[in-house]
Image (tube, rainbow, N blue to C red; front, side, top):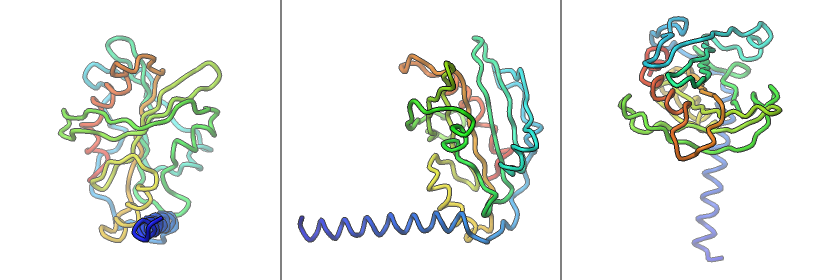
Length: 219
């Protein structure tokens, strides 16, 4: 190995170590949010989104609330014009700190009995929302014979991203820069789409949901 390659490798390790330390510090940071901008409660989220209609709304039980410690949330099932059913979860935190922060679906879903089959990254066209391209995580999981596709991302403080590690880093940076630690997890799930060449119902639903999120998740 050449000296130049060795030094580049060491710089890469140093950067990676620095990012890891920032992520750890974000989770354990004692900083409190100075207050998020005004927002609308998720209780007022529309029950009709274009051709999509809410067909069921769920509430968390006390045990789940004690674990998640979310400040505002939404759990609904919507039906599309072709009969497709998707589930929408939005969990919003006014502030995050050690022991009270967003839980990644990568850990929560297996804890609920879902086993992973596939995982990857998705770019969803959100041009109608003026966002161009929306980055999301994609998980295909099963519970017995039930197979589902989950799309999820993190949003808040003017950022939209899919990385759990970036979420921790941005959390600390924004707590210092803005005095804010508010943010949300958005997840859309439904039956797995077997034809990867078509836009899945989940992707179509995300395109309908995304333009509205700014009213409930402030920049």
